[in-house]
Image (cartoon, rainbow, N blue to C red; front, side):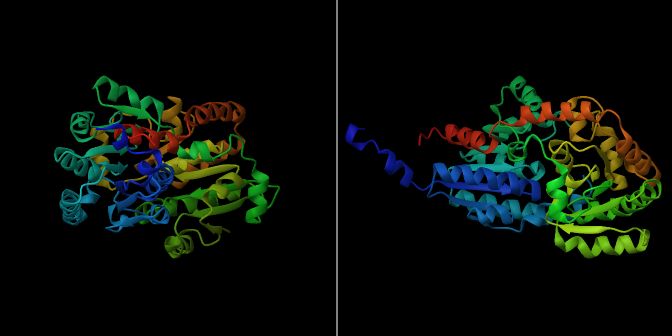
Length: 394
């Protein structure tokens, strides 16, 4: 190549990059959208396509398949949708084989994305997985298939990198976008004013999940537990964070059926403000536990799976905790209840203790230390790693 043939900076920016990206649920949509925003600054003319939620689509990503069809929890629950998912994956492989992207990025949803990445990598495409599968918690043997499937693993948490380094799989700790977005200190009063909640008096926030299956499994126990707490605490305000408006009628029906005398405020699309307004949070296990930890609120965590899934999980899972704050602290910082231990009395007793806990300063300090460790300018860091993988300078 002659010196005159070397493309200028402006010409490189004009090159169209094709990014294939697949997210499988609400949290993945959030993380992926942040990454796409950062990649757009590097590649203004990039084409994004794959399986996208509303946030990704707002960043210009074309969705080739409805994202909500991938949002299946549990081991056995996926079987009912298996053929649909396999067909969708096969179609994506054929599509990208005919029109190869510069890079494929799978965001979470490892059961779907890792097989897709494996097939595309075999066909010579660069592949990235963002949000490490929990190989440190169960089925560690998956690491070998991951090594054959991805050119780069992007992790949210620092402890996840060790297993990839051990198996010589390229890995980059990016940090968590939520940790960058949430301030180190989040006072309750502004959130209470915004939500028109009492400035004085205890507030309990209920976060029964972002999926219909979670709500069906947990909401009745959450409402019954809140009712028991309200009998023990004067002037308790109970607020339910509704992650998706389509589940509001379901929640109201469960409320009316199981605890009709309990006064509840329902607030849609304001989960973070609901957490910030609360003194204590009762939440389903998942991303909400991380968000609650970053806002530094005491919490009780619960989760219930289908019986068959739980039976398998007990034999496969090796992690000592289910709640992310406990995993990140490597100690039991918050009470957690699983399966048959999820009942109104257990939850109510734990909630009252959280309201009365005298160790809140210690919990807040540990949560702050973890928060600080996760603030890595995650989306920019992840975008830099993707660009570096392609050997592209912009």
